[in-house]
Image (cartoon, rainbow over all chains, first blue to last red; front, side, top):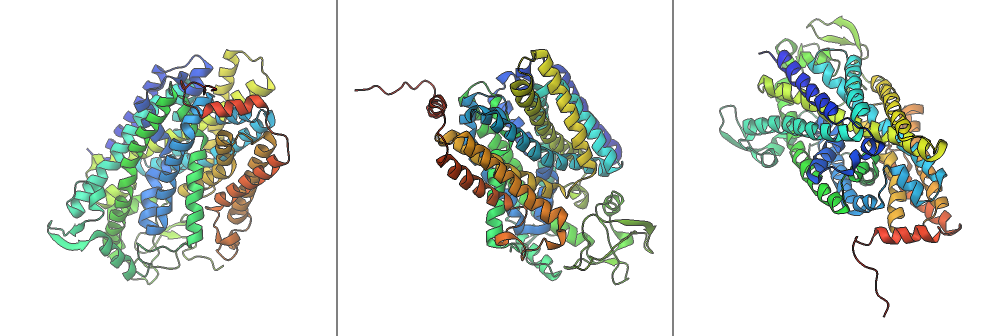
Length: 381
Length: 203
């Protein structure tokens, strides 16, 4: 079967599953709508929290940012993971004990004021819309690439699916779809990671493959460590070494702290702890969620490093015509582009002068069949 | 991540699986957030303030309607995004850190914190962080370099500074205003005591 058909089957199948769950868990009361009736088991809640909390950013962008910026991206790993611990230890059980439905509810009651409640509602709306915009975009990108539709149509399909199970099933529907979504996403993240790890280092676990030596095409140990090879590759191309950072110390500290405290203050994660029966269950499910999240987060740095080595080795100094099919697929969905700066028809990767933002095409094809860019060079500041 | 299986030449079904996984990751988080928005509107605005006598059925209907409207607005932002996925997400975290984290933390651990302090803190944190991000990302993107940043902090990290302001403002304000009522202080005390533990016996 070809990739296209399989993709339709997998994505379509997962949608059928989500909608079936939503229909099975229709709600009739506000308590069910807001906190799933407060009767979710700790393990299920742990998986749901993990899915809730690992966003399109964790899945799509994080390994990508790590591949792209290396050490600089570790702020995301540290911030998100650290913040989660902060939330689970410091806040979640107490908030559960307070026994409210929503975060503004807690703030309104604790500060005995409807003004405080309203301010909290405004904060919730600001935070959530900022965050959700990124998620919808992520959905659109996945659709655009794999189902070969426009990004905007992808966003619309995502809206319809979410509409169906969020409006129908409320928190109860969302919780059990999230459990299913966790299973889908963790499987989808670890399977390729394991494949790549075996191919490149011979280690089954990407976590150990990350620190291991590379294999050559014939499967013999080259004795070169993955990270050494990667540093060597990117330095050759004129980028700074993969394992050194470019951000100032204070900026790294501030971003990490913002991500950490932000994680602990995210209303949609906090509310997950309101859905379990008892305070004790809030703690237990926080433990499960941490375990479920760790599976993905400990593989992400390895996936990022594998991807960058692979990308550079496949693409650099290769004629455009002989690039693998995936390059053209991504080019067609507007997410990657190539400018033949020295007109030799080969792709060279090097530091400096990238174009800003998403590529804008002129709609024409260049001499090698590549899509031409409207502004191939960064505008001078 | 999405292109990874193809770059590494992995089997077709792995590529398909990754597609399903990407959608699952995005949809699960989006749904959670949309629910938070809808319950904030139907429960905290409508039920608790505007129309306290609303029926159970009415509130449920309002929650569903709010969710539907939120999805449409979210879709609009998805089609016209203000930046890359991870970047936008980093801003959301900054906003959450600067607005919620201090009031929740002090709400649990500092019983002297009162409403004046909390409201002032949240407003200062949210407005400061939001303005900083909007300024450097949309109003004057050409200024978005370390030389122009306050203390060398990028818009992605500014939430921390907003959070510090939030803490400082709320602590100062609460010093100069009346303490919270006794029953609130009592509740805060009780939150931290494990359920089932009896009160201390006076000797």
